[in-house]
Length: 497
Image (cartoon, rainbow, N blue to C red; front, side, top):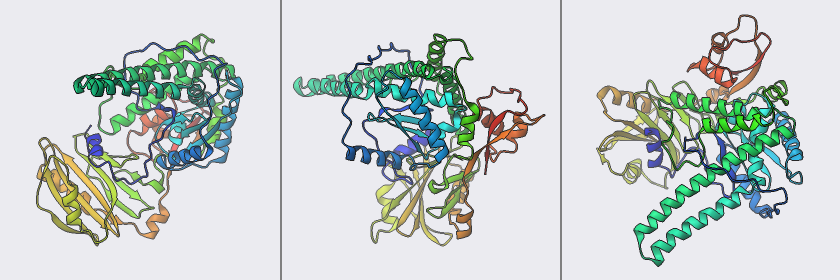
């Protein structure tokens, strides 16, 4: 989509720190961005007697942990929840085929839906993922999936396959002196790797379900969580003005489609027993996440409708009408249903560098830039210009705050005067936050409430601190079917300030 294209144009600077992690077993293996692919054949599980892999040096692990934390907004501290997660992990480890391995769960301060493991047994889950789960058995399924990547040695297997793919390409290109053959070999290698990784994901799903059941949890928790994750992904996609991915569009995806994974998880659970077996522990889990931050943390910047605030950096601005924000790790993105888009990030100016010089060096490749216009935006120096591409027209703007430059790129296929007026109004809304505004910035939180007689999705959703698709968000958040009747006394998650 257009927001993704804008994200690629200026990938070097960003509002949040981004670090690429290495040696992740199943990195991003539980995520909300699954792309449908053809179903691969899974591989057999590694037996319990598989040799141990020597863990990386402690200093390397510490650096890796620090980089992971930085990439996901830091570590989120909620002691009761951390204890709850590690109790689940200990229970799963004791019931696994490798009870000699021990795991530690770290909670990451990110609204993204993600979980992954390091080969040394460090497990990571985001609070965004925990917000989607509805009981301990669902979280157990996530942790068991990541543990399976460790016990099945998937990271090492994949590294071997990657080396083989690169070697084949180099042989064709360097030894045979055939660059085209080298590219073909590399393309085939990527397809093979994608299939290999999908097979690993399905193997980890199946192994995880079996381990969840041995630990006494409900084996159907995996399928429930996967369905909720898929619904959350679709809701996010629609909220950003995009269309859900259609099956079969990306054969290089490293993850199976959500329906495929749900089908496999249900089949694996049925081999264990009928629905109703095992422990769910919904009340214990909801008590552990009660009060957890939901969505963007104010320290990383957050949106309230069309207004984006970054209390730590001390600024705020309004998006044009109809925009929805997505505060990714790379940059702040915004899209509207009619195809307009924006991207905002930060950069450091060189000593004595003017904004005009900065813009001249950093406009969008493949466009024809117009004249640079100087502005005063609420007491701050700013410049803006229009840059026309073949299909899109961009308004590029930079606002100076001290030595920091905040860049905003607005884009439209057909830039009418009315659309450009909206872009300029958004730019001129950029302002410094007062100390009072910074002090009043509060994150959204998940609160657990009990349904009362007469409560419906609409009545409870109407009391939540969200305005966009509130009823749908409430249903997805609680794993409810659309229009499902609420039972008086049932505990439910709501979004509050």
